Length: 160
Image (cartoon, one colour):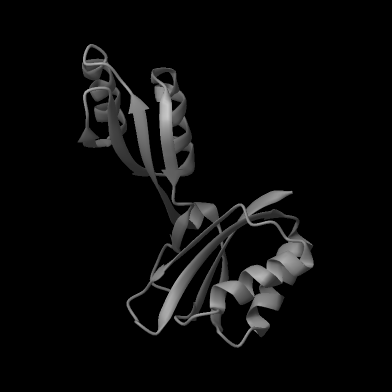
């Protein structure tokens, strides 16, 4: 099994996400992450779906997606020919004495501290999933109060 990144341009209207997630559920395909956002065209949304599968299953998924009326274009991205990013927002338990150490870690990872309270802080980080994982592992000993990750969003490199 290998991790695949599927992008789909879809109609920007209600029910599309339900139909696509239903297709995955009916066929027993797992979605590792799903990200949907607007595009330069207000009539279209871009879905980025990460799924682990074999080559035959990915071909089947793309064929099934292509059959849906609201799906305008489907691509399987090659990771080395794509730009992939994820957003992390992380709330950590931190005392005033620990802040300089944590601020240093944030600077190294280019994370932004976006909220501060007497006993916690919230940091935001964008990057590839392995960078996000490394930052979480580095800061976990402070005590993670909450975290949220957007899931992968990606575009193929080049003109087309």
